[in-house]
Image (cartoon, rainbow, N blue to C red; front, top):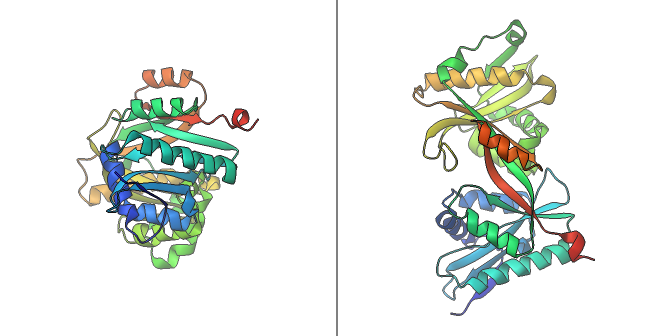
Length: 316
């Protein structure tokens, strides 16, 4: 079989094939338009993604690198996702070439490989990164609670919270929404560039009538968008819940509670009564004791293990 190797190139349909390969290989969701937005919005180097295709243009495997915005100097290299018929040596080649490019050309401070826990490919990905010399470094956990919409909607609004107001966002709020979105560390990591954040606000947030903006003294201090979703992994896999994306100015933390009440009320108005509201937060730990703690806590769950490439040894 003749293999064609190439870097990322826009407008050639690679994003659609990439999303399809990832979904079939990992069992997790992917979106071709989001892949395209990330390359454009983050101004990624075309060499940061490698593809192996057949002569007919059918994608066999791909691997890519992305910046970890919240950790300057850190880059994440993916597992080489592939179709079942892809020769193993092809996966090896595109990964090794991309890793060498990252080490020698980009020269990051840290290179990380992520393995999502409790998926069909967890063991294969773990074995792959360990074989490539990566070292288990850090653990990503999700802490979550599930609450009834009616319970949250009936939370007491203290006298302090009565100074806040809520309404649906419009195009006129774009600049304020962008400012709040990038004031939140997590959301800034999700949408690192202004272009990417603006695209999300215009094409997703503002087009959804369920969006909520929270104001105090005419200043936007918090924003949120509830949505129905089916859990794809972990203890609640297969269940449908109401999730939400939110951002809040750090100096107005109490506004988040008011936002949650308004989101719950919106859910009840829309007839989502049968679905619980899932409230989640992510955190990292270097201690393996966190895994034992997660096993003891009902809402705490290990989501991923991060493996680091020993650059200090490689570059000696």
